[in-house]
Image (cartoon, rainbow, N blue to C red):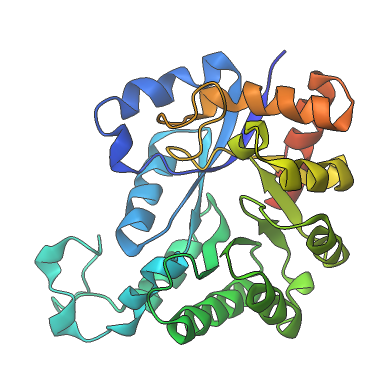
Length: 281
């Protein structure tokens, strides 16, 4: 029986507005037995909470993507008017709730399994790197305080990401390097820190030689499957909207790289997802 765990999705994205309910209702029947929807902004986190309350098989992660961290720089009432819809629960005095307080409250939700996605993104290089680092640290500290794993986003920021994680002793926090895109040598360091590696549609790309070398090196018990949907659809759907239904293509590619049967990939990835997010079977 096919049973796949999509450990990183964004079904709150507007790309799913036209058919979200139909698509999500059909996933379990196609073998997608569990999904973690991952927040990336304040509003995205709110929508993630809605999704995990609406679907039994959907869990969530709450966090602010590095490219969205400027939101956390502004904390006065006048900068977050209640009618903006950014926060679902205004304070009793009519003011809008402090975003940091609100984020921490959502992490206590019984179906919130991680803080994420958080990290550094130097591809767009905004907001300023110091702002990204500041809120990366704050969210790492939040995860440590609440005993939750972290979902790490790192794009063109390999050394700074690693330096911060090592300085903060993130091996004690645990988590996953989402959409892993660095070298086999970097993978060795993250393995030593106890991290998992999120692998998705990029593994099927013809020009993904570096990633395939890393996946061949990384032990199967440290790999989880993810889509990052609606982004990064695998071949043969590259460039189109991605969904969890495309994960069998990633399973097939991973089985070829690792030289093991596809059902072994699915079984290991399922068990790894449960361990990553500290879930019961």
